[in-house]
Image (cartoon, rainbow, N blue to C red; front, side, top):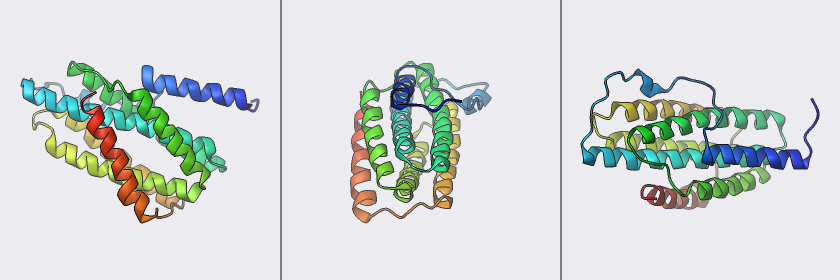
Length: 214
């Protein structure tokens, strides 16, 4: 296998970005959790709008997760960490496609700002990677912890009878908790208070508020 030069790597990242934003991303081929829901319940208009808003937020979050992982893997000096990031990114692609399929079923669309979420997160991930692997892993840990809290909140807010969306978010929560545990085991550092309690929640709030509508 020949080693990739700079042009190869750039083209590969462009390909990954286009797959994430504009088409179905490569996945682990795990079954969609909502496929187990054989008799979906019809939602009222208000319930459908609520589910659409929450699932669009989650899809945007998964686009951002791809950017973060790709940026961190790109800048990591450890082949082991790169591989770990790439495996987690593949699992996040499962989430991405599940959310997009559910939005299609609900008769809606993903956020029109997906390219913005991806590119912004790619830059953040690259910066975290440049800071060093322990800080990059710490960023993964804190990001996944915040995502789990968001998922808990969304599971509370989803209409009780939207079983398909609930099944997807429940599996996503399991995976995000696993990614956080893997980061800790690999040596994640505890991020400084201003980053994890001020900057990261602020960026998350901007993304969730905007993607819910656009």
